Image (tube, rainbow, N blue to C red):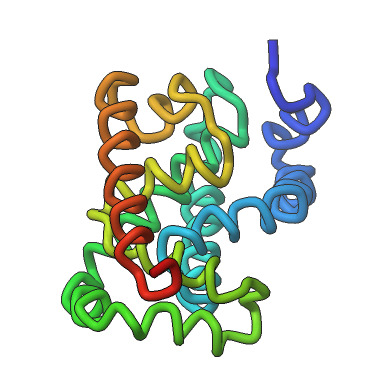
Length: 184
C-alpha cells in the first residue's frame, strides 16, 4: 500500500503525468528539505545549491523509488547524503571557517535569511564545530525531532550508533555554550 498518497504515486508511474506529479513533490517538500539542508551546510546559497542537487538526483532516480518507504524519507535520505557530500567536497574551506568560529555566528547574523538572535547564532556556531555525522544526527533529532528509527533509514546506521552520536553531540554543544562569552 502506498505511503504518500496513491494518486501521487500513480501519477509518478504514468509517463504522461510524471512531471506534474514531481512538480507537486517539489512544492510540497522544498521548504522542509531546505531547512534540513540549511542546518547542515549553514549558508543560504549552499543550501539552495544542495536542494537543487537533491531534486535533480530525485528526478533522475525517480524510477528507482520502490515505495518501500515514504517519499519524504527517500527525499530526506537524498538531501542528507547530498549535504554530507557537499561538506566533504568543501571540507578544506569549511574547516578554515570552522577554525574561525566567531565567523559562523557573525556570518549568520549578517545573513538576510537568518532571523535568529545572538543565542541562536551561537548555537549554530556550536553545531558547526561538530563532526559531519554528529552535526547531521544532532540537527535531525534536535530541530526535526526525527525518531531514531526513521533516522536509521535515512542515514543507514544503527539506532544505537545514532543515539551515541546524538549524546556526544549534545555534550559537545552544551560544553561549547557553557564556555561561550554570551553565558559567562
